[in-house]
Amino acid sequence: MLVDKKKVLFDVSSYYDAHNPNITPRTFLLSRFNIPQEYFTVTQRPHMLVRYTKKVIAKIFRTDPFYQNEMYFKPISDVLRKEFTLRSPLSPQSTIWLQKISSASVSIAVHIRRGDYVNDQHTHAYHGVCDMDYYKNASTLIEQKLPHSNIQYFIFSDDIEWAQHNIRFTYPTHFVSHTDIPDYEELFIMSLCNHNIIANSTFSWWAAWLNTHSNKIIVGPKKWFAHSNKTHICPPQWLTV
Image (tube, rainbow, N blue to C red):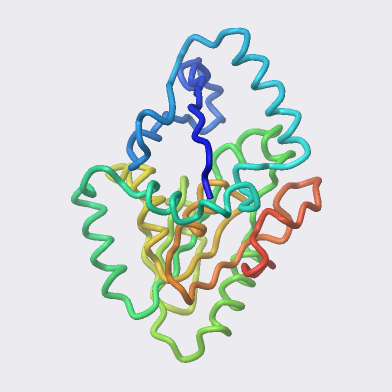
């Protein structure tokens, strides 16, 4: 139960700095969701407290990536799932995909995270990347749990062209990601699929966690970071390979 609500100050100044071309650019989009605006304040002028807080958070993160560990917010799961719905109607392109997903007997969202995981050597060294064997094994595992089902795969990726050239599944496969679809809508659409195969990515972790299907099957990577054996990032009911 949420007893005391605290306001959060978000320093988004780094979003507006000159980006390393190998780093995936970000935009602060929390206001696109049904999160009450009085819960947070956004600033591009970090002061001493914010800098200090960022240092504290960095120390915590080295120990535990709290924003993708449900033990920190499980008591308010219902609140979060309600608030992480979209404020505005879906764009036309997203609406088309929503209809296709809704009409599929069994829909599986697959997220492929590349971008700076592949292009930036420091990011790659820290995170690593889920390879083709992972997706092959994940799809095999989830198909074994759904025998004789009319499965359709829906692919989401920050490098959709790579996915189109490399991803091959036994069942019909649709490549969703497009420049006309905002990333916050992609996250929402992924969460509406029956099941999820996620990457070692916070983006798809949250899409899977926000999935409200009672019989959902989530498959995630057993090794989340390249040089870490943290095992509690995926909730215990999720499968890992």
